[in-house]
Amino acid sequence: MKAFKGFNKDLTCRGFQYEEGKEFHTEKADCCNEGFHACEYPLDCFGYYNPAESVFHEVELSGDMDRENSDTKVCATDIKIGARISIAGLVKAAIDFTMSRVNKEAKSYEEHGASSATGYRGASSATGYRGASSATGDYGASSATGDYGASSATGNCGASSATGYRGASSVSDPTGVAVAWGHEAKAKGCLGAHLILSDWRYIGEKWSDGDYKTPYDVESWELAGAKMIQVDGEKIKADTYYRCVDGEVVEADE
Picture 1 (tube, rainbow, N blue to C red):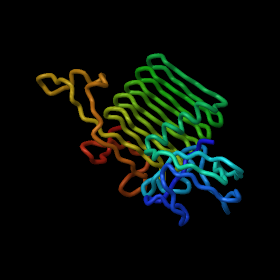
Picture 2 (picture 1 turned 30 degrees about the vertical axis):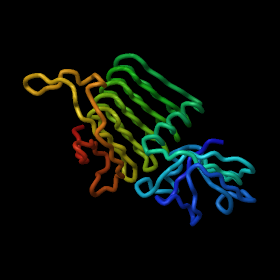
Picture 3 (picture 1 turned 180 degrees about the vertical axis):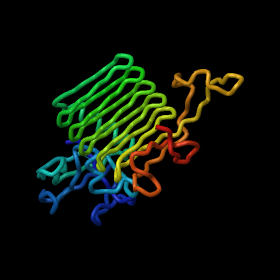
Picture 4 (picture 1 turned 60 degrees about the vertical axis):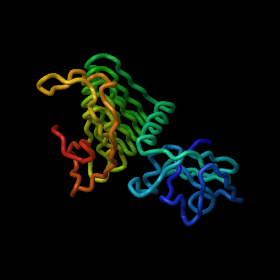
């Protein structure tokens, strides 16, 4: 079974030393007591390991297994530690996870199209210019990939992603993650939520007045870096959009 696991930065968990690429075995799987633990839903890892202080890996679980009902945590007698995965990778995996298990799925490919999914593990996707995507159920995944697109996830453990030019991503649950991965994209969240902000550098042609000639062309941009922040109510305010510019987190206009 494919799953995801959080570790301390030295790849330890509860005092046990793991190693990438290695397999480990124990005699009994008893959730929360004994065995190797991981989560099927990637963002459930954040409930056990602070994203800002941890590393995350894909893992393979096998052998005897045990579960608990509070989330997707699974305990197994055998585990293989796979490759390290970034926070952005976890969010993409969360969206893929939801898309593959949806009870209700909504999509819009039209310009100015609107897409909404309200059920448990609903998946919503808007890919058109100025498209709007919203997922309101628990474990919902919302994605807006068009330029100026807006994405919102309001349920528990929701994932919101805006990858188009000047896209806007938001979450309103403290377990949620908002990703702004497009050129000049922005993200906001409620208190406790995590934001992932990308920093892009324009490398395309400009007009004589300095304006961008080809801002909608993906080839005109290169990734300069990324930041992950948590909305703490002090340095990072709740319900306020942020961007990453020249390596610095700055407030963005509504």
